Image 1 (cartoon, chains in turn blue, cyan, brown, green):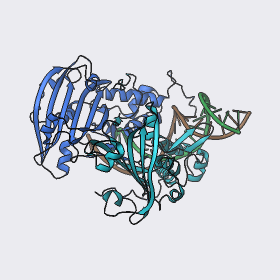
Image 2 (cartoon, protein in one colour; image 1 turned 45 degrees about the horizontal axis):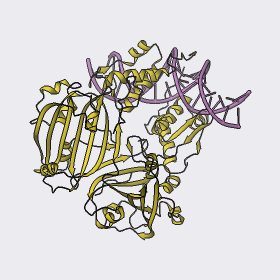
Image 3 (cartoon, chains in turn orange, purple, blue, brown; image 1 turned 90 degrees about the horizontal axis):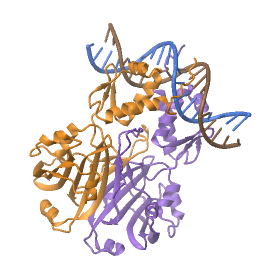
Image 4 (cartoon, chains in turn cyan, yellow, blue, orange; image 1 turned 135 degrees about the horizontal axis):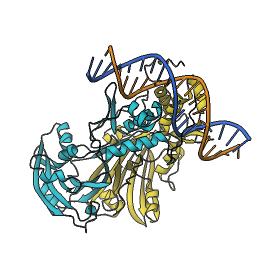
Length: 257
Length: 257
DNA sequence: AAGTGGTCTAGACCACAAA
DNA sequence: TTGTGGTCTAGACCACTTG
């Protein structure tokens, strides 16, 4: 019995406080992917509360995908996925291979430079910071599939200084070197400019899909990437179902085309 | 004291079973938006379990956005949002008004017809069903902003038979007449064909962003819509943050541009 | 004022996977 | 075998909001 509900200082429910505490340690990179977080009974002791309370807190992390729980083993920081299931923006290599096509990659240029504060896209990265600029090209069955222009903040990811992107696409490299993060995507249609058209073997003015993505870690911008696809080569898919609760009726067969 | 964990028949945890039960009633339209669902103590009696169990089940629905809970009032089926926060595809009227522009709407045509099984986009709707086809145009400050071609399955939404879309955009009408649903979006870039170019006051061949959306209710396709935007008029935004737990560090100022 | 949902506890049994 | 997380209970106090 009892349980006078020790109302925490911040007027925030205790289990919310615990969730936020743990999430902060994960997002900051303090607890890297794969690391085991404390057992529930340890968190009970740390926070001085019942097991149901810490359990609720950690289950919220699991529902958000930040951790994975395994019986008898413990709870571990999850490896970041490229995307949630809602907006599928796969790694291009996996996407092309999944189509049964041969994937090709070509580095076009790689250089250090300073940000151009005049460009609004770049302004979201740390102002006046040094960045690594990588321009590359993805091929499917030998045909240009996408051009990628990427900036990596060297302040946020100093390991990139010594990275070599001649063989490894920068997206794949970052997946292994940047912990959990927030991201924003912007998707637009544009007419190919002369340079892009040349790189994609298109006529200038032809429509292209442009995907821009900013990625932050702990509030600091890590990378900005702009990928340009020929209009007929790529289509983004986003599924949305409220609450993934098993529905006996079965989902529609959403696989044609 | 007791609590032998009455393992349910389906080998599914009781709170999961309850969540699925309630979600099914909501998605089927059995409980329409705004309807109050049973109080927790009523669910306790129905399922013969402790309050914590039904509470966990209903809180899962709330987390998924299917219901809204108000103290002292009860728990109510939420009105479907156009989109989750992850992929923001707002109603065009709200989007344009939000920019401080004048919104305009024009119906181009409205007619009943049968599905054309040859078109793969349409094939996802119930085969051989009768549909209402609505073509319309959205304007911002008097300039064409988007053309919309929509099919509404009359088998799934018979009320549409008597709807009048001369003044009301079909999207807004559907929001009030179709309950919770699943959706899929496909986003692509295309060159404007002659008809679309004329309707958007563009030169043929100019790039456009095309958004296609299929919506299902209880496994049955309700509507398909194809919206075409001039490339410079529209940009889709998708944010992704793992778990929206308050992070004391604060999110980056993601509002420039 | 009354009743809802929000939270917390102390204890218990269980399934399961790792050691 | 052991200990983790998964689940459930019976009871309690509280905040908030609505009638």
